[in-house]
Every structure is written in structure tokens, then in C-alpha cells.
Image (tube, rainbow, N blue to C red; front, side, top):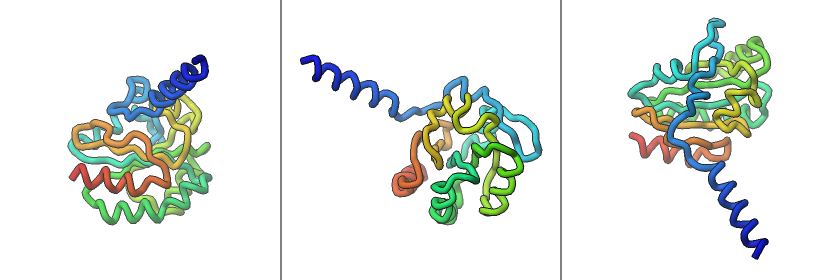
Length: 164
């Protein structure tokens, strides 16, 4: 009986931590990220730019092999969903490496740098445990897909198609 109870508790705990969120926490929204011009902008104000639009958020880094490997799929997604906005949040350690990565990989969209990296405050507020990480926000500002990774492009595509 104890084993069944422990298994049930573990299942409930895991299920709740991986649950689909429909909005960002106050902590996430208040975190500041660096813009390409060096200014600091709250995540809330970044998201305001996309009011009335569907946006794909990719959390990535120039040093991330899986991120680089997924870029052709991302570019295909951009070509097939031209009505969608793309927001890139980098977990690079320096602005120089971040900006060089944007240029090298010719990433089209808006770009911001997470000030304290992947495991910092912002990363924790969005449950960042892997990159690349994709989040889709619909036209109303509601999160339509909270957690997708580089192997989930079919799910990403289906979600975008459902939001048309």
C-alpha cells in the first residue's frame, strides 16, 4: 500500500510540474532582459509589442548544439507561418556571443538576452530546463503551448495551425 501511495504522489507531483500554463507569472513578467541596443526591458513590455498577434518564443543560445541543429526546422516554420511573429530570448553568457550568433545564423525576429543565463531567475520563472525551448502565445496573450523542444516541431506546427 505504501508503494502505491508513493507512486501516486510522485505521479501527481510530476504531472503538476509539467502542466500546461496559460499565462506567465508576475515574476517572469517583471524580469528585465537586454535589448540589442543595450537597454533593459521588462518581459511584460516585450510581450506588449505582440498584442493581437501570435508569437513563437524561442529560448536558445549560440553555444547550444541542439539549438543550431533545430534552426533549419525553425526557418521552415517561419516560411510556412509568415503571419506569426518570432521572439528570440538568448541564454548566452555575453552580449558579444549573443549578437554574433544572431548574425551567424541569420535569425529573423526580435532578440533579447536573458541577463542571468539559463539557470537564473528568468529561467526559473518559465521552468526552463532545456534549450531550445519554444513557447507559443496566441493573439489574446494566452499561452497556447508552454513547453516544446527541438523534437516537437510537429506539435508546434499543429498549434500554430489551430490558431489561424
